Image 1 (cartoon, helix red, strand yellow):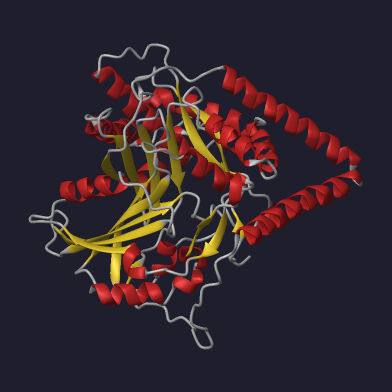
Image 2: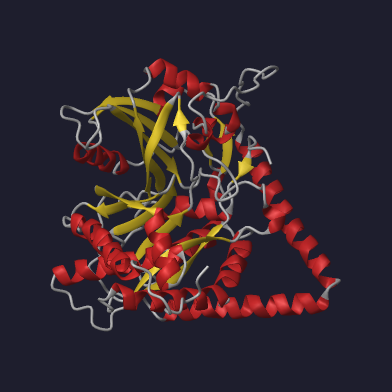
Length: 483
């Protein structure tokens, strides 16, 4: 489905806007490190211009119907200026990774301008060679508002800029008309567009209801599952996450740290000790957090933290549709178990129980209801979803391509994800697998997490503990949910 002028934001995307505050910026992105010299700025700009038509949303801005009468819409920006969105910078000598991470944290600390398309790219020169190498490097920092990114089903600008081959793929632009922005809509047109989409949403629900009427058995089962799912979500809300040093008032400033690991090590652990790769990831994160809490003198006896884990609720019928169709589930992090090997089967069983629960169905039901909710109700629902009482931190694990990617002939070496901090949450852990690696991006509040490095080191230590137990292979060990 094309990204059109006057598309209305989905309820999920509008929720990300409602959730944003001066301290909680709702943009996401990534820090990409490339081997080789940086391309000249003009070549980089031309490369983006040649592919921008593949993601029309990146030339659109927000338009809000008058008097808060509906969700915002995407409209073409008649003043779109690529040079505004693409920033060019360089690190001072020696160009260390510590300097690059400090720059990334400063950029992540600044909100995006809502009067313009909600994205920025930074081309950063002067990055020192990797240890043991003499080849210079450069970085690209991608920053997109969460409301802009097209969820699980779509693509963003960074995706279309990267190629599988060192030789940039040629795009067939024959017959492609120069981009001409649509006329800015009047207040009446905004109202009409919002009403049209609302009617379409209601019509869609009516169509599904009529279809369900012809299958009463399936419908009753679906209603029962939805009711049970909503009940599980309510129960989770009545059982708040424990109080921890992560759940404090945050400011606008950030720290950023990264961790490099090998995907093969995670597969070794899951093959020998059980669970899935994602179970191993959560086990490692729980170990790092437990060690960090104890380093602060906080007792972890009986403490089980909760991670907010994003999941897609996009149905088969919605594949190819636009906008985020994401919701969240709350997964346990048993930081009270200091032994990583003993922690893994507990995490694996808990996640298996979570997958078989009705939480995802209940969350999907809420998303469907939110699609027709008025703005005031939607804003309140968004605040409840990211309530401090429900979870301690965001943990998102994103599978990426397992082959090298390139931009203008330069190979991408590292792909570190960048998440966001909701109010009352001082840490977000984002994980991305790419080309045989698993790479962590740790975003922390500047004042609340001066010891963010302790968590980064704990991630390496937790994985090392699991690997030590997994190799050499232990014959006769029964795997938990191995696959």
